[in-house]
Length: 138
Image (cartoon, rainbow, N blue to C red; front, side, top):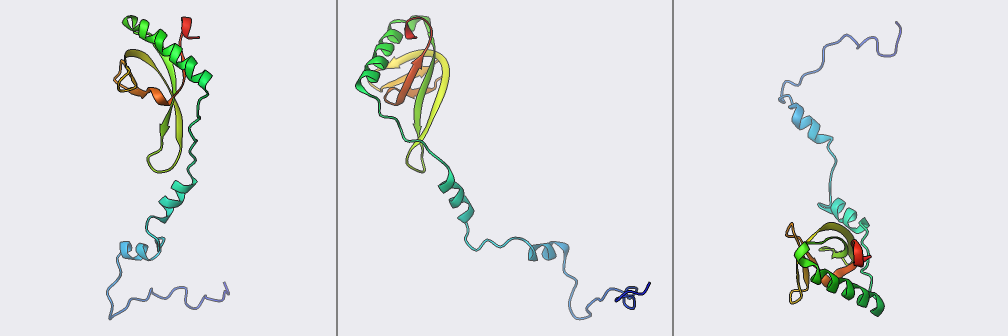
């Protein structure tokens, strides 16, 4: 071989006589990414996360939901199974998302304005977009 570094290829690795050998952990830390702004990455992710504004229902749509709620109240002893689409506000920014749940209704609380499902989930009546079920709810 006649390479540029052939004369030093077989020499022993240099070891300092005045400084101790650095641990592998400390050597690796030298090359870890530097985060000058702590939390900046999370802030960017949060700003990029999309939310949906809540839809304001028309009077006709609100009347239709009230009619469906009355049907549900009259059929409560049979624990009707329904699908509810409702708005959940975001805790960190304006807007939120619409969620769909399916379950049996345990009770409707007109004072607290919530529907309580058999699994104890509480759905705020004022944020319901749609109620679906069988029979007269269709």
